[in-house]
Amino acid sequence: MEDDKFRQKMHFAHIDSVSIVNVGTYDLAVRSLFLVQCFFVVVMLTVASPRVIIAATTDAEPEANRRDLQATVANLVGEVRARATTLEGSSGMRYSFQSFTSAHKLAPGSISYSDFVIVRLLYEATRDAGFWNMHWTITNMPPNSDRVWSQWKAVKVVSPLTPTAFAECDELSALYAFLVEGAGVRSIGLLWPFPNHTVAVWVLHPANAAEVRVVVPTSQIFLEVNDSFATKKFNPWHQKTIYEYKRRDVADSFELPRPLFDFFLQQVNKYAGASDSTLQEIRYLREGVFLKYWTAEVAARDALSRKSGLHGGPAEDSAAFQSFADDMRSQNPQ
Image (cartoon, rainbow, N blue to C red; front, side, top):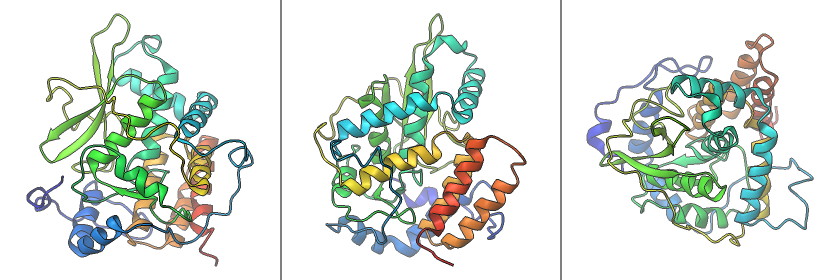
């Protein structure tokens, strides 16, 4: 649980509505101000039940809306796995894998590309301000995802402009580990780089190579703008043993509200194939909307400006920026 003595070391970034983020300490600064200004509001929000997320998502995905497909955890994981297979051919996944294997000096065939795609997809989905609209806040809850699932169960209406659930770093990491393990990828566990902070770790055993520990930071706490999946800012060997997360936080038969189930799968389709840098930029834009640092319209315009600046880059990146702008404007008519 992130305490104030660490936050006193943070300083504010210079932010404007055009470039959005100008220095790496922005995300930590956002949280510092958010904690000071909104602590009591957050406490009220996180204990309220049932929760209603204002404004509805009207986009329909025929496949996800099939009435014969129950909105269970088992089916959510199954649909994520199916989409991961399709996403193996996307530019974002391929380039991210190449970058990852190069950084860790791994032969591409020494680890499973299919596992990497699932690990990366669920990281971008479940991280703070990722495309499943999770949002970090102090909760002082145990390091499991039980409370996330209970919040999701209470969702009545879904909006791309608001969080689907609130969670602290240990809950976010547990949620990630639970889903990745459920999707069949080994071995994901939790790491405490500080007594008051938690991240996930993916432990790899490459063929003919030493064990590799990959830090999966499910929030940007203590990190800067360029820090993301596989960051070196935390030493995964600081902890002697990474225990695989085997806890069954909810049953496979646990049922989610249909609008939320559909939203999660739509978001995978829209964003998961984009590049690391594009998803990181969109993540910061999304969080700024959550924290009301800028309006949804400002975020939409910024996304379209970034799309224009791609100058013929990967189609998945262009589509992701366009989808984000459309999402921001879907309930913000001009």
